[in-house]
Structure formats: C-alpha cells, structure tokens
Amino acid sequence: MNYFRWIINNMYRLVYLYYRITGIAKRKVLIKSIKSSLKFHELEIPVREFTALSKRKKPMGDIKVMIGRFEEQAFQYCIMYDLFIPRYYRRRKLAQKLVLSCLKFCEKEQFKNVIAIIKISNEESVALFQKLGFELLIEDKWTRWMKKEVELYNEPAVVALYKTKKTGSN
Image (cartoon, rainbow, N blue to C red; front, side, top):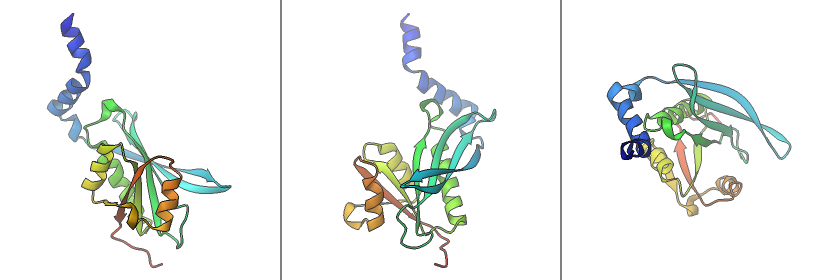
C-alpha cells in the first residue's frame, strides 16, 4: 500500500522522468495562432492567441498577445498575458516555445516594445521572462501606459519589457 501512495505522490516527477528518458521533452511542438478580440471600454481590441498542440492536436498550453490599450503612438507596445501550462505538461519548455512564438509575431508586426505583466508571486514566470531577454523594470521606470496597464490587474505585479529588434518606422 505504501508503494502506491509513493507513486501517486510522485506521479509528476515520474512523468517528467519518463519524458526525459523517451525524449518527448525535445520534440517539436506545433504552435497554433488564432485571431480573437477583447472588449475594453466599448472598444474591440484585437487579440492573438497562441496554443501549443500535441501530436494528437490536444492543447498543452497557451498565451495571448494584444495591442496596447493606452498607446500614444501606433505600434508602441503590445502585451503578453495569460501564459498557462497545465502541471502535467510542464518541464517540456512549452512556455519558452510559446513566448518565442509571440515575440516572432510581435517583431513581424513591428511592435517597438513587448511587455509582460506578471504577478509577483509567480517566480517561475519571472525567471522565464528574464531568461528570454526581458528586462524587469522597477516601478520608478514604468511609463505612463505601463502604470495604466498594471492598474487593470488589481494585484501586485512586475513589468517585464522586451525591445524588439525590428522597429516600425513610426
């Protein structure tokens, strides 16, 4: 009976070990992109949803990108939000692949800045965004539009900024 309790308690570790041994963690992942919209103060804001799909087309995680709501100039910034990977799909670098897909999209669309607003309590996401080249900004360095975006979250948050390589002509 103790053997079964140990298996149940360590199931996620065993699944991760299985992924490492079989090489599943290194397989290519299909990233599907869907256009949608978000209603904000009677405006329809375009949103792009990125979903990581398994070989059998089962969703394994997702992230969303939207145009900045308080832009002073066209294509000044966009926001990454709602990064979610279910626990049993973690440690496969899915979050990294999703964020990199979003960054490629943002560079292609010629956004100057990409920001991710992350809850302070989510240390894993903060570490991921830092690893991918985002700069964590202290509150003193936030711009006016960053402050407005953070105010909408109603929770203590960190702002991670990524300046794209391709910048628009605006």
